[in-house]
Length: 472
Image 1 (cartoon, rainbow, N blue to C red):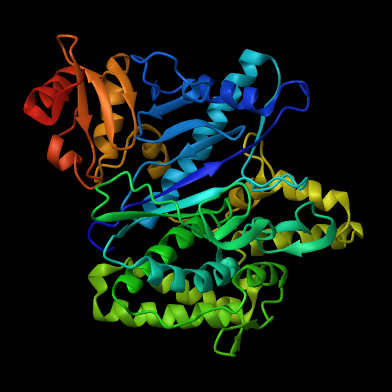
Image 2 (image 1 turned 120 degrees about the vertical axis):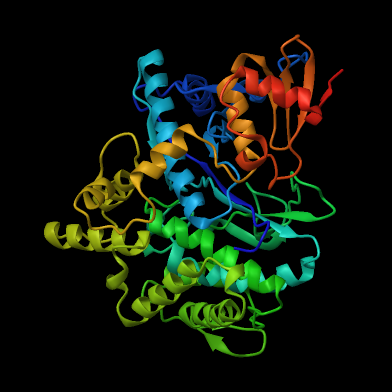
């Protein structure tokens, strides 16, 4: 990937405790975060007074990630990584973190807490899976705004999680590709919970702002299949790389928000979308035009891309064009649709049947085996990365970003961390003096720079090296 590319995924999880309807979801979520049994430290400023209630359930983990409560949902924000494969691996590790935390909270509260990796409760609420990519500040915002809608709308054919029901409340029977599409109302804006925009304008880089912009993408679904997550992270990174090299074609949609819903509802992948220049192209046509531009740019400068992602992107598009069922081993929505079709045929059900909606919900449940787990156990889903990589991601931070230092400090001296954020930490040194550890540079503070940081002595040496200023 392009030198300096930093990305990450954050996921809000659905939460439900049917045996305790009187407990508010925010209380359940707080119990989940507090119950995490692994090594972690609070990100609240424990040395400060009047800690806000939301900060009391906001933790940094030993793998460099964050676990916290956001809008009555437990949310896992994976650590900064430099590849789509690492992003997918840490996303799956996040699932395991939240499940472990929910089981601990269930034992503490005496009620079963269910955890769901989906994006809507079909009662009008939607919660997100957000992608974050650092983009050089030199790339003009107007260029980003011009390029992204066509890609984000059309990539639904790749990264949709699939959903039973059409409309925010699932009020119309049917199946659609995306769980998020029905909840978007604007082309651009800063909101994430109302009047959701296709292109989010939030610009909190958590890095030197003169050089970096953080692109906060909220259109994507939370995916169960690691291959889909890999494509989601990798194709967006590739498009941003091509955009930085001025290699993308002009594909301006006439009505981007409406097109998002149209693509999601077009299970046959044949509905044309109107462009500003009068052309009508399907989502597959748009994706193929973008892929061809990226593939050509990757041939000119292969060092700038994850070339296995570019190849896989083209192969998936070919298979979707030929027969979508050929992607049932890679794409969430195709695998889910096949399972639901078979179940409906076996039991004589139509798309309005609540049994299909229940099966859809069971697909997303993480804390007990469901239909997705059965497909995975049967070897019917192609994987990216290994289970050993996921186990390692549960315990260790990525070694090639600042997440290494953050996670290793938490692992070595959790009781001495007085506060933490993406770009700083407050740590007591061996003499009890409060020090601010500056982590502003995302691609710095790596294992190669600071070493293993295996114990308290190594952390003290780090603080003595002058990388931390005295904190008043």
